[in-house]
Each structure stands twice: as structure tokens, then as C-alpha cells.
Image: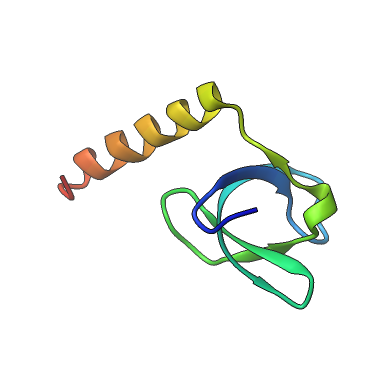
Length: 73
């Protein structure tokens, strides 16, 4: 997995799935940041899956819409 790639996976210690952006790799774990910002979380690489191009587009449109509502665009 490459930095800034969108992936879907579980937060360590939680069952809920989340989509995040790959920020870094440390000690065998992938660090993900929630879309829209926030605190990064660690995920095991084997528990991650790539987001489809359609899902990635949907997520990116959502990020742009959120940014436009807050006046960042």
C-alpha cells in the first residue's frame, strides 16, 4: 500500500470497518487517517482492502463537498 491511497479496514481493537487514507507504515502496521481529518489509527496490513475506483470517487466527492461547506474551497 502506498501513501495517500484509500483503503477499507478495521481499526485495531474495533469491529467497525472504516475507510481511511494511508499516511505511513510503522512496525508492521499501516497508519490511516480518517477522511475529513482526525486522529490516525493503526491497522494490520492483512486486514486492509483497496477501495474500488467507484468507492474512491464517492469518497473524494464527499471530501470536496465537506470542504466547500466549511469554506475551504
